[in-house]
Length: 170
Ligand code: INI
Image (tube, rainbow, N blue to C red; front, top):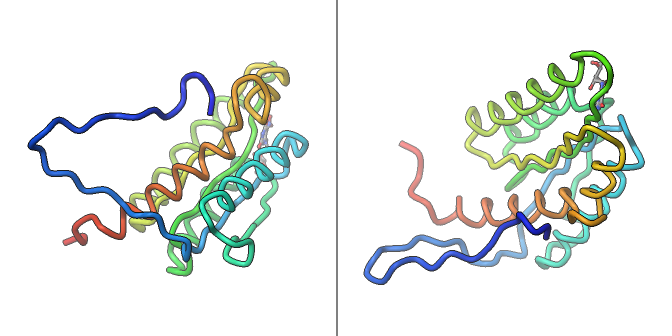
């Protein structure tokens, strides 16, 4: 976990709390984009290791590859709609270049992944590294700033567990 990562929060005494319980029988889909593959490979390895650390066996983890971050939303949404998975993890790496292309790819990947969650009620975790340089991306793919793939997988598991105990959608 990076220094700006997820921490612990104490719920004040007297408040009601709903919290998910550990589940090992979750089925998780990971969508990984092949653009900047060396970075995304590290995110994918980190995500799978994180899922295994939660007791999720590899035969419950489905990996789908897409060309780039732009293509993440469509595959994430289809998997979320399928009902086959407790959560989806989107992995990618967008590195700023000399043109505004970066901004379009990042914005639409983020918007589309959010829409996939909103449309389906299935958690889709955002494990897309958006960096100004390759060095920044490396630092977030198992380097000094942790592994955003592991972080996203951790968030996906927590949200999948939480969705099992939150009130049903009306
Ligand atoms: N896709 C990425 O995942 N990362 C990038 O850094 C990137 N850049 O820089 O261009 C990128 N572009 C490809 C894009 O995601 C689509 O695959 C492509 O436009 C075809 O739809």
